[in-house]
Image 1 (cartoon, rainbow, N blue to C red):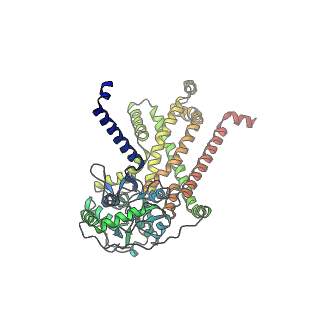
Image 2: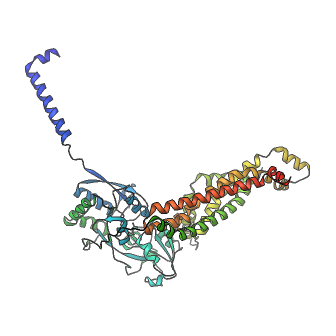
Length: 502
Ligand code: GLN
């Protein structure tokens, strides 16, 4: 080393390269290369051809291509995040995402909650019916009919205006079309391009749309109010509209010439000034309707589950081997698969399967929910019953039998009443779980408490107030139920009884 530094030539070279690297480094530190920013776009990926999953699970569609092109034109990177359609605007309000792209129509109501880009697509609502349906031809003929819609959409708003219509609300458009296919509703109101695409691409040949469009709508890209990114998005959109990229993407997905788009839609900049108290008190009547439904559902399913669970629990202790196996399989199945899957399977899967054999069969959301919740809770209750019975000492059975009681009588008069008292705490748990699980029925459009809340949010976009109210109502219901069970427990305690008696 020492020798090397003695060589002047090498020494200067080293100093020079050192200086150069310091210069580079300082340049890099003082004026960093401007890193490309990344914007997070939320989307609801079950709306072909705008956004859906491709063959390998990747996100594809018109909107997806459009945003990628806008990102390229306006020099930002794009990241997508999936969520439910009715969660998009609340997510923008909470600023958990930078923007959303989800075939979202620009409406004055939404403009109060978010800012929209310039319009990027011309669409409109259409009525979908079964191909052989002749009597539904217009909005008027939908009066008193059963209609399926997607939650929080313009289709859902339109359906609300129809007098006497029975509306079922689903999380996404494919579920509502499935509902029409299964014969549970007479029509679906949805965006025409999406419905047409679904009919063409999937095996929905049994469906058609009625000729007229109900509305003229324009899609926009929503961002949080006052977002600094809106300008970039608009700039990028204008660039690709002018340089032919937009037309290319349009042709790729719709095989047609894109229509002329306006530069703006009516701007309504009034921000909502309704206060929290008014929001909640306006929502309460509908939420209370939901409470009644939730309680009714819980009590009914708890009762049915109790009957089924007791029978299964006793059968599990039987000496007949196939019976034991069957009950074990039942319990394993219902405890081992998510309740949500069971609800969807009973409501959508089974009718579709049965209809595949040419048999006319459908379930309404109420029956499907009661079936799923009762079958599911029966599996849990069966285990509680089994454990309760097994906890009673053998000597009791022997004593009962030595008094001449048969097996059934022993169970009914000696074992079960004692076991029931021990079963009460776990049964209370099961009841409370059941009460909360009724909220899963919202996925099949059953209007229990949570669904009532979501429907309100889909109209007023006040997610915090409404979800908080819904949560508090559930809390009050579960606290009241646990108090009721505690009371029942002490009431059934023979020690308390004899104390009171004495
Ligand atoms: N365009 C409709 C709306 O904005 C539906 C959009 C969607 O389902 N993705 O309400």
